Length: 368
Ligand code: SAH
Ligand code: SF4
Image (cartoon, rainbow, N blue to C red; front, side, top):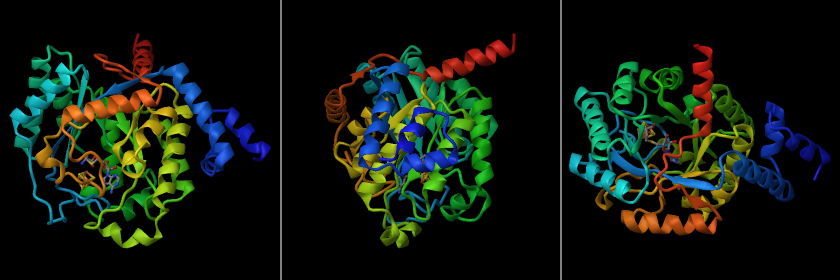
């Protein structure tokens, strides 16, 4: 190990060049990086892991992202929308099992019926739980008006990954049209902050054409956007997508996984008090992927509450784990995994990121 690595690691305000060096950490260096991230996690967000019950609401999507298995161009899957009853049942399950929060994720749609239905479901979940269930939405880019309507209906967090903060790389991953425009995505992230949401973003790791340079830029992007939450995971190829043609030029899966762990650890060091998810894609590569992510900085997991009959059709990528596990099995399995990772579960606790509270205090202070 070069002395320089240790010196760089001592700070937490890394430059682009330093991040590239840290991302290329070897086996021994990695241990130091992970130990530092674990210590910071314990000091700033504690040893608790929060559950967000995940509903994969619908795989109908207007977009055609080149990496995604549910893109509109994939004609081999059958399209579904969860019924209102199914959504409410999943919410009741989350509530009764003390999850404290749900995430409703979906393909992107813009018609009025869809938008109203989501707003209504959000307020129904709030009513059913006496305001106690926290609601996160992940429904892609919407207008300011829609974001405001959903916020006023009761959602308070929103996940919208930037996918890659580098505009050139972003263009290589999406069709060249208005619907898939980089500035539009960026603008949506700004709009979410303006509307008062706790904002989460993230990237896929190990994409074709992606380098350490891009990933270092992504980490600095998260910091400059001052995000409250992050969800990152390895890119996993899907045969019915345009990026499948690059499958032989990708990093081996294990390396994509290792790099994802380093990204989680570095982000924890750089943004000490945000929430970071241990994503399902981590577990798609390594059976202990989520535990490993928790050990190096993650503090949120999302047990899947989607009815079993839809799981096969929500394959964003292949080899997605847990597609045959009912909600209670999934919960038990995750509970065991969290305990193995030496962490505790934050039952009945929204587990909002301390970062958001600090951001709010700062904002209020500025306005008085
Ligand atoms: N439609 C919404 C939410 C659903 S997609 C949106 O796009 O924001 C949720 C996330 O799945 C995406 O942000 C993307 O980062 C991830 N994803 C899609 N295809 C993937 C793949 N092949 N490998 C890993 N993650 C993928
Ligand atoms: Fe649709 Fe999201 Fe998949 Fe893009 S990543 S095709 S927006 S579901």
